[in-house]
Picture 1: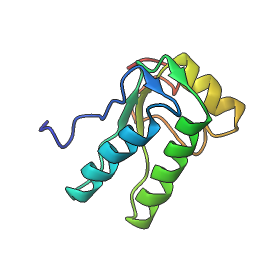
Picture 2: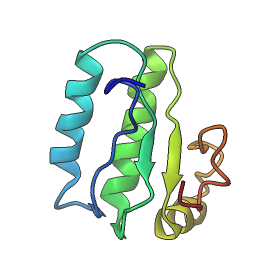
Picture 3: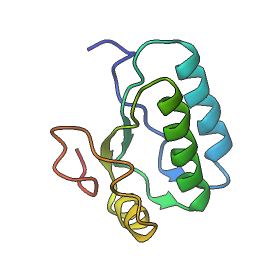
Picture 4: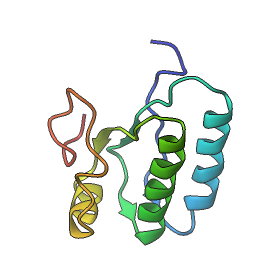
Length: 104
């Protein structure tokens, strides 16, 4: 597995304070071309509506490239938040992940 296939991790926070910098990282990765790797949200300890909006925006962007957003792992907080917003079906875990709320 090369670096382009490695899951992308945002760090422990995906909040309004960090969403823009993570968005820039994601856009830079998209600009590199090739298949977009999964996101590893397993270590996210703080997650707010800005994080949700970023994931939905990324999902739309990838859909225009005929790709799907895939999560390789999601912390319990991320899974609970996505469930609260009714978004688990929109942001599925990668094959082989136990479930979106499980750490991979």
